[in-house]
Length: 603
Image 1 (tube, rainbow, N blue to C red):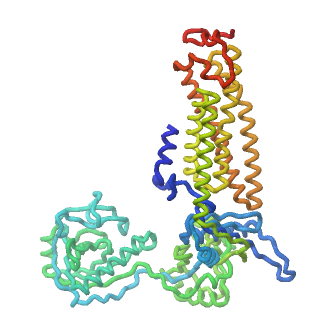
Image 2 (image 1 turned 120 degrees about the vertical axis):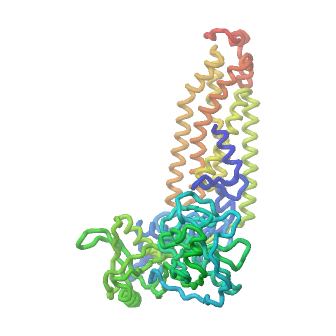
Image 3 (image 1 turned 90 degrees about the vertical axis):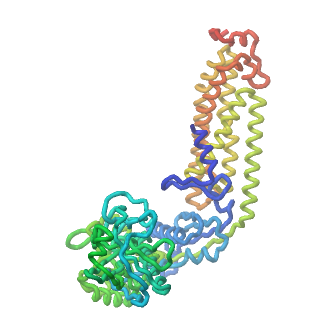
């Protein structure tokens, strides 16, 4: 089973199962580090100094963690490959950007200040349209003109719809549905100019709704349709319900539905009787509008978590500078005690949108919420602070790794690994014969499982990591040699092959355990010092070697043992000379005693 899983893992370059994504554009889908793939290597150091003395001040752990989070967020949000961001020592941050060959761009993204904005958020804002009666050619009431009649999502019933027009969630929480083919529509044919304007409006509103923002989904943009005939109706219809007629660029179908998404008539005939000859006019209402008022993160002096002095509830305190206090005061005066809100956006992503309960003119305010917890207010304050770096930094190391050099290093490392594996396999087979073949099979299984684990964790494979993997190949046979030598001694003492196999594994276990534990302790020490000193090469070596060592224990004591026990049950077990190393002598009498049906007692 494990061999199958390893084979499938390495057989597919990328793996995507639900939210589990692994793989890269390398031959086996392994994640390669900077020195193998090429890219940019940057190291920033905190630059805190005492203004009075000019002496450097060491940053606090909280400041470094905040700096790390901000830089990591900027790197991840910029599309700069798959960045590696980590703290080195007490005052440095390492940024590695595999595949990014433009260090100027990398430095500009890392060094830029994130865009923190405070905007005036309004709801249900009327939209002026350029569509005139002259843009409408014909207006009729009819069914949806399609061979497979489709009905917009959420109208009339609770059956599941498979219509392409029903993609996504429906405004107002309605379910995806379909109904009878006789659902009445207003079919409107526009001029080319009118169709372009109306279609552009529908696409704009739909794109806003389908953007993934919960704000737009809870407050969808509405197209207001006034239907004039025997009965006048003013309809408010989400743009998702308005459909282009297949095969026409100028005709649109608008369902005759009420505000709770129910048909206004049971059939097309009933609708024609109810409205007669109809005319329509159009308007629009935008569910959410964020107005830029020029208030940004540059105007924010500080944001920090706290508790309300009266209620003791968690709050977020914010402080503005002089310019920010004036802009913030003007905004609060405009929207106090109204449905409007202050939308706080970081890199165009909403952090929070509080209402205003009073006019705030001093530049000091706090944000409270019914769902606020101490952890949540700390997170919000930290993200508000992300508009600027918490401490000044300076670039102290910059290195660009050529992708050609990385490819050459990888190629030579792979060749070295294959040669090492081949030499070890050849030695084991020539010297240990049948057990050597078993060990070789276990070693190949070990190599495949090791690579599969690297891919699934995932491990960023650097040149030092490849060296550790090659070293682990040589170490992988140590446990087998201990077992085989012990088997040889037991065979000489007159044990049966099966008994010698079991005793060999049992008695070699303590030596195998001690050697592997010693190696793991060494890798832990290397990893700790590398983490403290910022030696990423040593850190990658230690991590990769530790994984290989742990896997060695499994393959040597489980895989090799199972395979060797299986071989002892075959005809090969009749010739003990095939199970002893070169130079070992097993007496003819003892070999005869190993024949099937004998007791296998000591001679």
